[in-house]
Every structure is written in structure tokens, then in C-alpha cells.
Amino acid sequence: STARVNITVLDVNDNSPQFLPLPEFIEIQEGVYTPSSPGEVCLISAIDSDIGENGRVTIITYSHSELFSFREVRGPG
Image 1 (cartoon, one colour):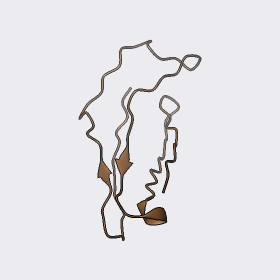
Image 2 (cartoon, rainbow, N blue to C red):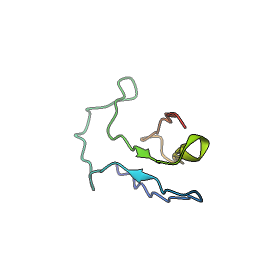
Image 3 (cartoon, one colour):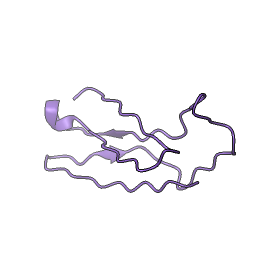
Image 4 (tube, one colour):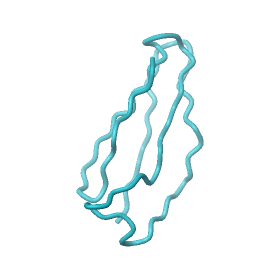
């Protein structure tokens, strides 16, 4: 199976968020991860040099597949 991830950046502050480098493609061998043994495949991370709440980066995901899921982690703002 495959999952396509599109990233749209919405920013109205002084500094735009910067995404840490990501691989263009990620291949996973069949059977490595199962529902009873899930694992992290890719970490999407961004930083924003604005101060306080304006520096908070929120990544919202919409998953329409039972094969893939995303977990939200919030950092300091």
C-alpha cells in the first residue's frame, strides 16, 4: 500500500516554519509493522523562530486509510 503526504504551510507571522529535511520516498518491507506491533516510519518536524504562540507549529493530519495513521506531538510555542 502507499500513502501520499501533501504539506501545506499556512503562516501569517514574521517567520515561516522551516521543515527539517525529509526523504522523498520511504519504503517499508512487508510485515515489518503490524497492528499489534506498530512503529515510527517517518518523523515530520518543523520549527518557527517567531516568539511564543506565534512560534507554535501545528501539523494536522487527515488519514483516510486503516493501513496508515499519524500521531500528533506538540512542542513548545
